[in-house]
Length: 372
Image 1 (tube, one colour):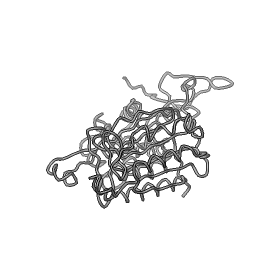
Image 2 (tube, rainbow, N blue to C red; image 1 turned 90 degrees about the vertical axis):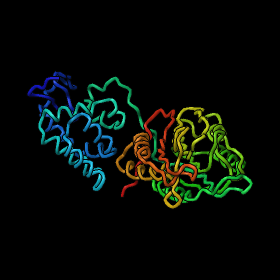
Image 3 (tube, rainbow, N blue to C red; image 1 turned 180 degrees about the vertical axis):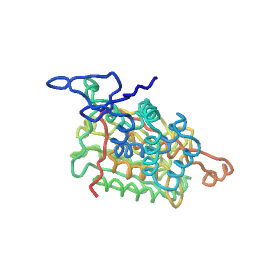
Image 4 (cartoon, one colour; image 1 turned 180 degrees about the horizontal axis):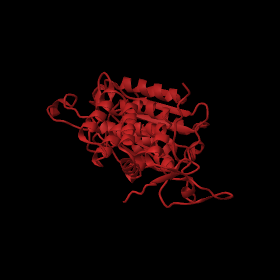
């Protein structure tokens, strides 16, 4: 693509317009303000910093791959991520692009328009696409999230198991419970914690929750236990199957949660079953995909829950939707590797964990952080 002297303009909504794009306003055609691309980046700098700092490592690798920076710049920016902050990285990256001039800024904006970038950072679409060109495109609305409390968040944590079950102690799971309790209380949910439950007791709790009148805007269920290809274990070694967890919360079985997001955070493991979503408005966040281990540090908690806690704290403050936050969890956890925390029979080998999500959400799900 050739670069003209006039490489972009800004419309009345502040979005970037490519050369040759024109459109009218109510009452007639308006003349947009002509700007150089580096000036467009400068004017949107604070917004771009907030967006791109959401996944700094992802941005850095794509900028490097696109050859927008040289090797020493790559390592300097990597040092920002490793030893300073993601915001420092985003600030320095944008400053470098602006100093390199219009041609490099133009390439940078083209990179931000790539599908992979837009999927990782949905807010880029609003920034880079003019409102006039978005007319006729269905807007993904947000779920209502303003009730007090936002809804119920139930946490079922099985740490101690009956000796007859043959299942080991889940040391460190209490750290995960504390973090989930803290973050969802902070997000204005009413948190209920159940510990060391048999399979029958787990099913009774879930059925009891489905029979309530839910006046909140959302429902969250977190299950932390040993699991197998049949489902999660109760403390007695009996199994709670996926249908026991999800089916009670369909519209037919729990009408008060109809059209409301139902979020299930499940600390799955190597031999997990298939979790088939039974209805609309469900979101499943699973610690790992089948065939991959999920790891738990005995003093610091599990990789998945600790990353989720961190990303919720950071992302909700930035106004990011839950899918964006979970994408950041997947990226972070998938970079972890271990050999010293693996089971004794596997020591000496290095393993990774890959969380994944499954959903039938029909709107953007945003947990609004409280004002500081």
